[in-house]
Length: 337
Image (cartoon, rainbow, N blue to C red; front, side, top):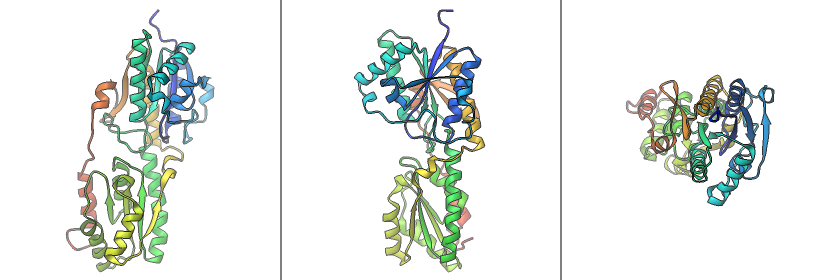
């Protein structure tokens, strides 16, 4: 009985992602179902440093599964990256009597959780941490899928579909910038789904003349008068790319930066369901005293992995999707559909 988990904390950190609320709900209700008290830490690691918390029960997370954002708020904390900040956070953990923490976020969130766990071990505290991946970039190496990606794709697709209506009416070229500083998952998935003329991603070096402008020329020769170029923010500035397209082709593209709208909105069914499964698994990992774990989606299964090993994992974008994009635009056959 001495080793029983009595109380855990849950927080969201870093950039918000649709489905975070569903994950928080799953953590709280699973904990309550297992006889474990749950404390919500507001504003991420900063809240742990500043003792910004709230007791959560099952009714406190009612009617949030359909809402975007996070009821616990989120923030990035430079102070938490220091040893002094981590010791302040541990003081709050000791004050609250936390046996474990579920940290919902991305790579930075998990590295912060691992650092806190190490400080706790050095201080002789039995604090376990479990990470739940939530980021619209889908760039967590150990997990095939991250909470928020599907909703962000749908948001971008809906926006581009509306943009296409006006581009077609005015016979224009549109350059749309989507999120993805280091990964092109969002741009490539969205590009395929909207039938983009070209997609630029950080993982692939692009020859603008051959891969973009020549595609536009072929499309124009085939009778198409509107063109859609999707750019991941890490592949370059949409405005600079638009300027280069203008210089090479004489076309005057219009630039749209979707920005933070991609993080908002009611989460999709996939994100709600995945978040619920991951939150459930996180609590059960803590209950089993499995510390320093990351919950991950692998081949449709929810698994828990050693945090250090998981953070060392990488995943590469499946470039066959780029082949699909090129095949569907018939770039190499001189015919544009």
